[in-house]
Length: 413
Image (cartoon, rainbow, N blue to C red):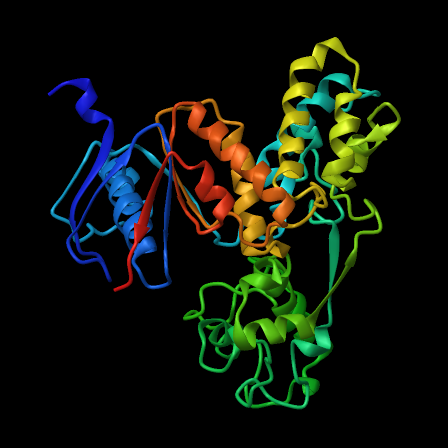
């Protein structure tokens, strides 16, 4: 077999979901657009067969220990697939990452700016970790790098007119019969049949505020004890409300009130990072700018020691604008982005990669994109292809179809 024979990814007898014994050759190092009506099997071919099998075979090369920590992919219903590449799927799933994930962290632009400020910022505030709100050296100590402070309404955690057995703990995770509830009701510190308001001052202090490990419960069957407020603060207070569902989320939002951190003004950064400036601006100032404005500010930084970093960071920020995301700031939480915005933010990170011979798979990247930006998106897909990658796009925008090297039109049924 000659190297030329490897110029196509071969799919034979694909029957995943709605597919019916599909045979297809996808040319490598080209831009292929897969189009067709809804239900024609575009996603079944591209994501559930091509991408899934590529990722499954790649994961199989790792040790069993590593595989146990990777996503699991079932083997698709297909007769044979040959000449696959390592795959990167850029889909429309919303970016997660919790309260600490921002546009800056998701695109790695934030990492570049931290390096620039650690070398060129004055006064010197420390190495790059001193400019990271996800590092103890750089985060605001008052809000732990979240930009907001949380206040617990203790009256919403308990109903003092009820006993423990009657549901005196109102937060669902502390509900009657649960493990946490038993640590209070069976601790031996309190009578679980007595209304909470009848607790003595010392009992109330123990019940609400005792720190973990501070006291040994009188009941030997309860091995450890921690007060209600102390436990809630440790386990729940600093998590994003979006990580909770149903009644737990409703209760959390009733109990916890959040506001901008008065110490850092919502910038998330420690005082040292906020006071280090380049051209009169701090890292927090740059993080708050819209991408369209930020690119020019970064390019204006005139310091030979960071010239390569400046060029790289500016180029990445400009890609946000090219993808129609020039209105975003780097401090925008990723949890607030739509599916289309999330997909294009992911693209920025991949466009900055120097890797080649990868298979990139995109799911309708023009969704939510203004028509004037479609052409610029197409140029970035071509840029990925010209780096030596295979690009497969599920799309039905005529302008993207027009620039494709190869089109696969899926029929109904």
